[in-house]
Amino acid sequence: MRIWIALVLMLVLLVACASSPTTSQRPLPTPIVRCGEHEPLEKLHPFPAIPDGLDLDSNPVDLDAAREQLRLAREHIVATGQWAIGTAGVFKRNADRYNGVTDCLDDDRRRGLIQ
Image 1 (spheres, rainbow, N blue to C red):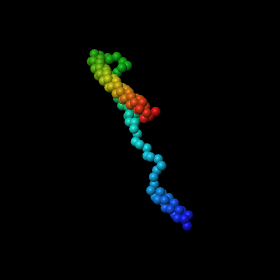
Image 2: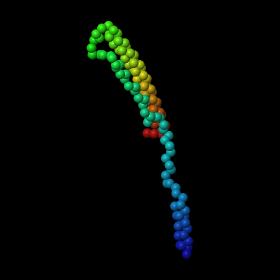
Image 3: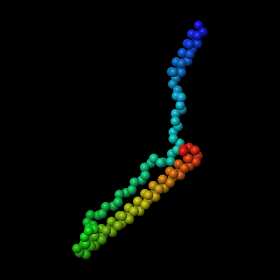
Image 4: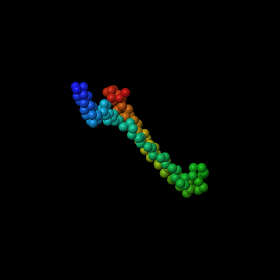
C-alpha cells in the first residue's frame, strides 16, 4: 500500500510540474551593446549634370554664343564646387560616425562585454 501512495504522490507532483511550464534557460537579455554599427551610412548626392546647351566638343561661332557657353560653364563649375563641398561633408560625417562606432566597440571590448 505504501508503494501505491508513493506512486500517487509522484504522479501528482509530475502533473503539477507539467501544468506550470518553466524553461530551463533564462531568456536572453536585450543587447547591451548599442554603438550604431548597423545604421546605414549617409548617401552621397548625385554629381551635377552638365547643363543643357553647354557644348564641350566645339568652339562657339560668335561672341554671344561664347558668352552663353561661358555662363553655362560657370554655373556648372559652381554646382560642381557645391557638390564637392557637400560630398566632403558627407565623407566627414560618415568617418566621424565610423570612428565613434569603433571607439564604442573598443570600449565594450575593454570592459569585457564583447570579444
